[in-house]
Structure formats: C-alpha cells, structure tokens
Image 1 (tube, rainbow, N blue to C red):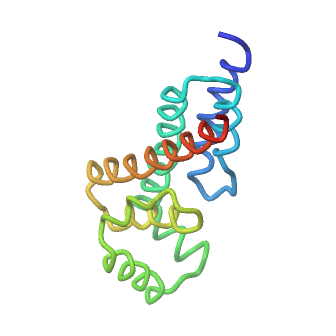
Image 2: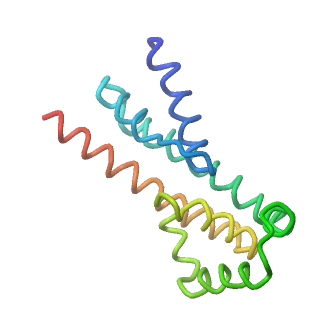
Length: 147
C-alpha cells in the first residue's frame, strides 16, 4: 500500500465524517482524487459511507441528548420554532432521512431525528442507503469521465 492509499483512506474517512457535521466541508473532492489516482472504488465508497454515517450518528446523538441545551440555551430558539421543525420533519416522515446527504438540510435532518427519538435502527438504515447511493453515483460519474 503506497502512502497516498494509506493516508488518503484515512483522509477520506475523516473528511466524510466531518462533512456530515455542521462543518462546511466536502468529502467529494477527496473521494474524486482517490478515484482518479486509481484506488479501488468499492473500498472508497465503503470508507466514505462509514465516515459520513458516523458523522450523522454524532448529529443524531447530539439531537437526542443535547437538543434542549443547544436549541434553547445556546441558540435561543423558542418552543414554537422547535415545534415547527418537528412538524416539518413529521410532514415528510422518516423517509426524508434518505436525503440526509443533501447539503444544508442533511445535518439538521439527522439532528431533528435524534431530537424526536426516531428509531435508531431505522435511522441507520435510511441514512446509510442515502449516503452510500450518493457516493456510488459520484464514483460512477468520476470514473465515467476518465474514459
């Protein structure tokens, strides 16, 4: 295993994890670079998905155990505002977690899922499907552009 492979895989995992938090990062560039460098696409998709899902799990746990402190004490949101977020989530249902990969809405979705105590197993399955699908599509697009 060369140095790009070793550190690139760790870098991909870290960038995918951090990209799933409130930090404005993107793991797609790291994924694309490693794909262009000839790394195994399946391994990259798995690593990126695991890192990204773990970041979403962190959001879920923060929402589950820290929502009151974060929303009301730190951000001074009213109960009316948090109720509106709950209504929006409930309007689209748990299936909206398939879109946890979407920029700007994905992180709040996973946080609200924790806040509303969505079944963790269902959360994990839906978020993983969505994120793995995104990385697979990105990988296919990058590889197709190489032809």
